[in-house]
Length: 303
Length: 295
Image (cartoon, rainbow over all chains, first blue to last red; front, side, top):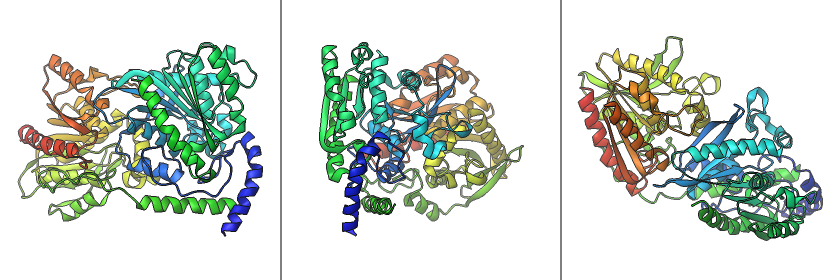
């Protein structure tokens, strides 16, 4: 049995670059497209980092002592942005972090990321960017396997309008300190970078394995010209598609005088945070090493 | 296909093994029959279940029928004896009507009141069911559909049911927790015949989807309000003083207490010393308040 798994794992490795180019919503329990397919490791329960398997995410949400609620945030055009909002347990005001999910849409892993940020002291808002795009006005949940396809129809303008509504909501909360950060993963990582480029009032942006706007057509000197927030980039060593864009992004950010801290985690695959069982332990290690840096970044920038 | 199945199985096994390594709570509250019991989770754990089993009081499910035929499943507990008593409506958290909320109702009855704990999500679960079938996470989703108007219509029916009970002395109070705390206040705004309202860490009223408190409704409150807050719950507690200021301006009684170090949901989550202390200190204040206002 062990031998069978290993043999199939090698076959999957060969197929990996192809799936990286056309990411698709995987079946529940499987890891994301793009990550090298090795037998999953047994991920230990560790509430100091975001849950990185679907099972741990579901458990974290069930056991959370924090207040989480679904809110229909009103957007400028009157449409509603269904969002999962989680609050920290603290006596003073807190910074707000907007969470941008990956190509798999709203799922327990995304909501548990919000719960983790609240545990770490921030008000977390996790918008369902597909709100109202499903059958009968539903969102991610109602789209099922069509989530990835629906996400790809969202333009940067669509996403930024939703993030603006969430940011505005967060700023007006009585317990908000007025600072806003954003964090995104995979598809959401690129959107996090694009939002930082578009929203000058943003205070910090964390990009997990997402490309900068304009990197594909080498127009970053224009697209990043108005970026104000410092950007923290977390990349996977085994993710050539995104990794290849980083050096030029660093060059342009430096030239424009913008802060861009980059960390690349050797051996980890694209999507490592929500696929901690993958890459023979490298994904878990990347999650464990990157998360404290995210926290210290947000704690500095959102205080 | 085979590969995916193998991987999925392995992941599931990993999850099960990890789930068995549940951490013991850092603090175990002492047995205290004078306050509501607690839970280590979101309200359906063994501790409140045992408390319900051990209760010597007469308790059971009753159907509260609304004018439109909707049935509100309600857990009723009677105090000892046969005399008349005030009725207290116990309003559940964002997790729906859990075993813990029913155990709180049991404590309310132990303190001398007829307790009615309605499942405000009645009819909103799959196939017309309610909280139990939704589960705590499903309840969190479904509860968004309960507008203040819907909540108040349901609570009006429960209040009406309580007033007609042979043991009712005609007075009605409400006590709510978390989402139910906010609902206890909005019920007091909507129901002029309510005699007292207690709000445990309830958010200030807002318009749907709005982040900012809307205190305009406070003007129509008739009942005295008692509010209890956790010091480590800035989301809610930051709204206490603005409400107090507005109530003072309106000349309406509003008493509030903030418990240092206590978190949101402290009565359910007595698994920290600060949360237990807040519960032990606040509950006698609640009981005295109801004894005074519902006599």
